[in-house]
Length: 299
Image (cartoon, rainbow, N blue to C red; front, side):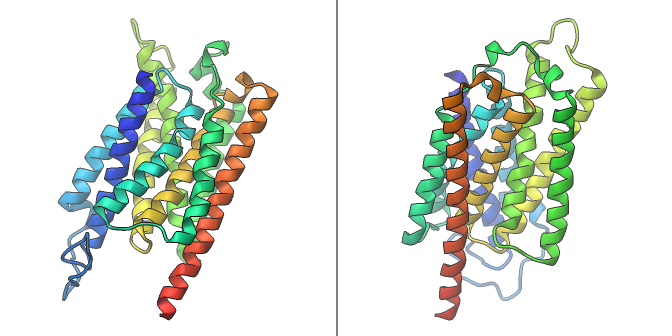
C-alpha cells in the first residue's frame, strides 16, 4: 500500500512538472504562458532550461522519480508501468487547470480506450516473491542486456529520423519509451540499496553502468518531451508520452525482470489485451488530434 501511495504522489508531481515545462516553452512566444493571449513583439531568447518555471519543473520531476524508486522496493517494474493509467487521468485534470487545455469531444472515446486498456493490464499484478532470481541476476541475462541496448539504439535512430521527417506525437512517444528505462534501471538501484549491509550486493561496474543509464534516460526523455511541447498541445503530448511510458515500462518488467513468469495463462491474456487496447487508443487519439488541427487551420 505504501508503494501505491508513493506512486500516486509521484504521478501528481510528474504531471505538474510536465505542465510547468509546457508553460516554460510557451514563454518563448507569449507574455502570458497560461492563456496565450498576449503575443510578444519579439520571442524570448533566454534558454528554455534556464527559465524559473522549467527549473521548478525539474525539481518536481526529480521528486517524482525518487518516489518511483522507493515504490520499486515493494512493487514489480511492470506494476509501476501499468499504474501509469491513473497518471493519464491526473494529467488531463492538471492540464485543464494549469494550461486551460482539454481534449476535444471526439477524442474522449479513444482516451477511454487508453484508460480501460491500462486498467486491464494493471489488474494482473505479478508476485515477485515467487521469483528465484534477484534483480541483478535477471538484468545480467543476455536477453535483458540485448533488450536494453536495442531500446537505446532503435529510439535514438527514430529520434534522428523524426528530425528529418517529423511525425505528430513522435517526440513525446520517444520520450516515454526512453523514460521507461528510468524505471527499469531504478528497480536494480532500489534493490542494491534495500539489500545493502556491509557493502553493495551488486557488482560495482554494473551498478555504475546502470546508474549512468538511469541518469541518461532522465535527461534524454526531458529533451525529447520538450521538443514535443514546442509544437503540440500539452494534453496530447502527455497522453502519448504516458502511454509509451506505460507500454515500455511494462515491457521492461516482462523482458528484463521476467514478471510474466509469475502470471497464469488467463492473466497473461488479460495483460496482452490491456496493452493492445491502450495502444489502439493512442493511435486513434493521434489520428483525431491530427484531423482536428487540420480543421482548425482550415477555419
